[in-house]
Length: 212
Image (cartoon, rainbow, N blue to C red; front, side, top):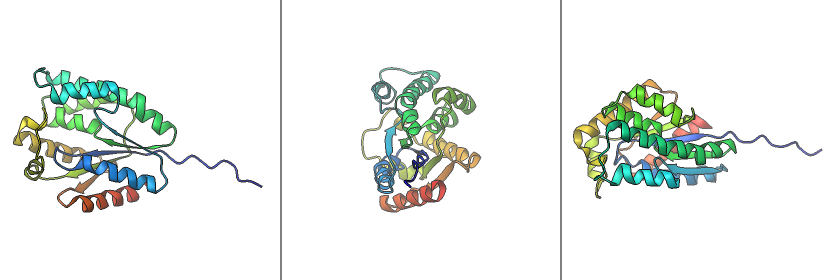
């Protein structure tokens, strides 16, 4: 007798976070390739971005410095881009059983506009719950790096957020570590001081341990 239908593999949602220069964006493609090699359907995205609306909003947020943005305006633009990303890409991928790997998600706004910025982190978190439709990552990989080392790695023109200075970067790191300490069941701290291959190995080990 033929076997019945195989159960659909459980979808997983992984987010890479960290201060600018931590190397998180460079780790997305290797992680996706490794997951696909293990037989998973994987969708990769960046937040903000990955949709036409998100990419347009990203340009305003990061590269249109001639457009002044109040803190609340900045936060709501991020949330608008994320709402579209969730609706158009993340939710459908998870629904069909795919894994999703995102370069940033809601934790970034809680830290950037909340802990390190001018807004109450809990207000940002509450608005984020609306923008995400309650979809939260199964695992947040926090690439942790000293701000001075991160700054030294950014050998390129800086965007609007990256230009906010050393004190801002120190507040970012502290904010991320507070978020990780408050939710150890969701966050995994990865030492990002090593070379890319070593950090990638740490990431794969964390995913295998936490999600498989």
